[in-house]
Length: 85
Image 1: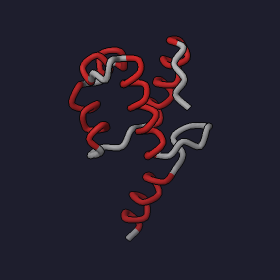
Image 2: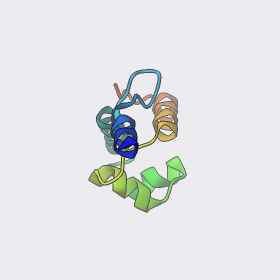
Image 3: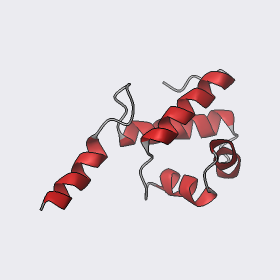
Image 4: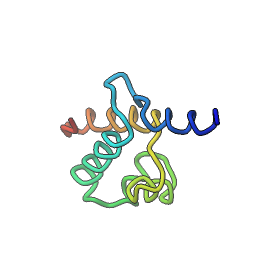
């Protein structure tokens, strides 16, 4: 039973110090991909340094983004002058 609680908690915990949850994190990633990388998962995966399969899993909703990628996305957006919030 503890495992079920751990899974539920990880889905609702904030991914960063802005209080970003999984849903908001995915929305942030989609905005950055769409506005900064022509809505292209391949280009986005390259700049993030993550496999295309992982990016596709986030965008398809089958895998939640992690805290590391949210922080990295915020940094990339800031460097490129893209407003993501």
